[in-house]
View (tube, helix red, strand yellow):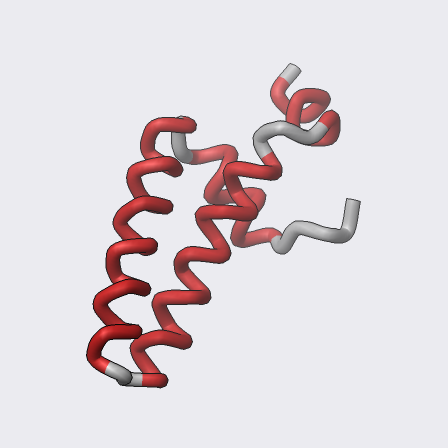
Length: 70
């Protein structure tokens, strides 16, 4: 599956679901704060981090991840 980057796959392998969910919620908070401030650079950076956590969570549900785990 070429959909996920190596960084996202590594994040999924090295973190538990709880850690990924906490990171996801923290990055969502950072996104909200960046949007309130209107800082586009901070918003773009927060969106990258948020996306990585989101995709890492999704990767944990794929058959490729489960096959690698075994």
